Length: 228
Image 1: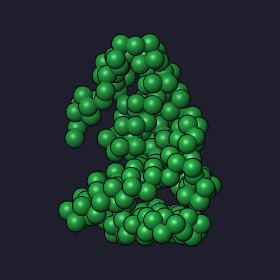
Image 2: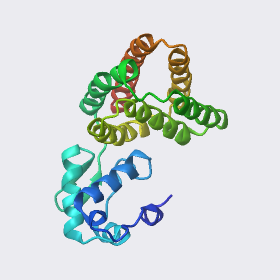
Image 3: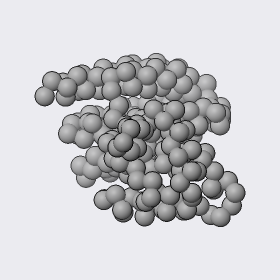
Image 4: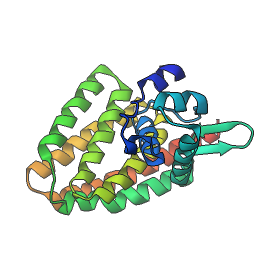
């Protein structure tokens, strides 16, 4: 998908007041990043985006400021605004947050939806069988968002939306390593099996180990890529 198609796919404001705030702009662009439609290094055109979103350039710039604070865009003087390309420090920060929130959500979240997690596993398996890395990544994002949704906390979901956007930028770097995504389909399925058996604490401990492994893999891949 080219840049103009990406901008065309972005949902327009519905004319209500909230749809034209900088917060809505930031949330919409964050979602585009989380869903893999805006990739690391992509330039964000003020003219194209303000038109696509139906907002003024001032409002768009305010939205950029919010995204800048999330560290998912970069402002480069005399060049413009770009989707960020995460580094090793970003990977460590993402996984520090995830290790704090996700295992606790599995262990104690009052709104754990095992049926929804199982449904997502079905999507992930279909994507793996088709060799579709993008859809595997999509399913993985949905799976972990659903885990955090178990907490019933709007604040934690808001935090996770920011983490998911940064995660997607990191996962893009693994597009040349399809096995990274495919073996996590199996790991996610194992978590659902434990939850279905009522073993929530074991699932939480397993997820903790899984996140440690994923972080190590991503850091190793990142460090190797810097040597090429």
